[in-house]
Length: 272
Image (cartoon, rainbow, N blue to C red; front, side):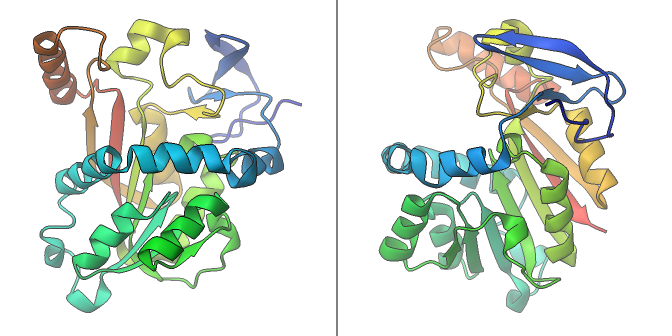
């Protein structure tokens, strides 16, 4: 059954992207692109929580070093991690990674003096992070954890929001549990990027697991509506590996970042 737009509540949609076996639609009123109808929340959580948990763990551990390098570069772009004292006194450096996978980033931030916590609904990956790294990781969705208000100074959510049935509820909860001047880092595919425009329904991020595809405009709108002030937007990735010779890819990547047309975007928002 079709659902209202998650951003504006609108009920009129137009076809946006035709993919293999499914279609994305665009809200007529605000422009948010989503799969509609969507799988049930319980089905989505079961998929990540247990059905494919072993596959996800194998994939994450095999690519852990590469993923961590990208996450650290994102924190560097956001100026968090190296000069964190600029934002928060030492005693207030509380970091939550939502969708933390095996906890590699949490381990790194803990080594830099942060008090860290994770949320990861894949029980296999959460258990890996607890057992191998000694981390505190919850397997409940963020909204079900009942974290106290003002529990964290930075919340990091990388390649997560596009998978959620209720992105607005997620953002609202992040706002509630952040400190008054806390920072929210959201990393997600960029629908307004060069690759999305070039490949459309064949874009590598137009997959059934991604229930929403955000542009800079629609993600900004969501964050602002839920009480955040967007301070920084960075995009990266002009062409995927293997699509062009390395020199051409290098030029495309540089142009994408300079123009805001990168394949992935990071939005840094401050709690107001």
